[in-house]
Image 1: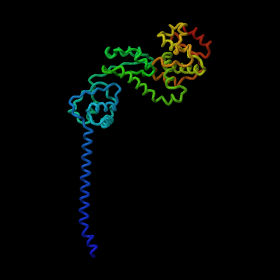
Image 2: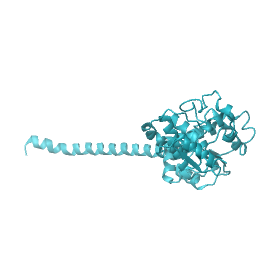
Image 3: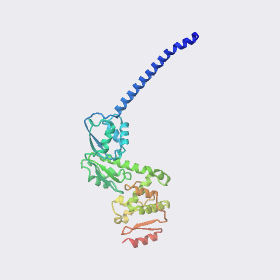
Image 4: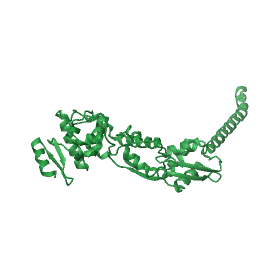
Length: 336
């Protein structure tokens, strides 16, 4: 063995010890990173000790909004971790509106908190209020008067709702004594958005704007009484619009004058108003009621026909005609 070979051989033990030290350092570094990660994760998953805490779940709150509220109330450290825990429970959609009394001293992680929420019954459940299709502001106010306190409705009038007419979606809503009229309106408009979003591509492909669809649908709510009559009347009104004929629907005058069709007079038909479809061509400038999904779909899926006239008989049955002469004959026959 020559001197150069001996030198390399003698260096091997020293090189091995250096590598060992490097490996040991890397192990400690990895362990430190792991410990920091575990600590960070445990803190993100923990529930803060706040003693007894009442979580108020308002009507319409989602898992996302519940998690955000828990973070805002300083009950959990991470909205994302709480959302994940609720999602993993698979039952966050079943959390009912109401108040939940939570002992944070015993619920120590977001997972146990999520389980507590999905398996608990709220201390009080909200009241249900139904807003039917075709309603106006006064109808909504009357419905709310049955479930909300006079204090909550102080200063509220039909106009409070009618400034949003057409866009307050008819539905059954769960409310409680803490809800404000402003919040209720926001929720109704959110329901409108949720129901209209899937239809917007169809609306774009139609010959109407979304506002025009809602105006037509609001008329159908007051002029027709079921899915078939809505779709047939929708087709007739669209036929009239295409031919440049006036719509001549009683519902728009009834909206203005607060009368039924039977109560309208010849002088009413001559009323100067943009809502008077006996005097003006085209659609009225705004909806006359809050339409539901059935009426909106009827506008987008009318039953094709050559009919230009319709009337509702004394028994509630619809009768259709192509010519004015046929329509006059239907009046004499079915309106008694």
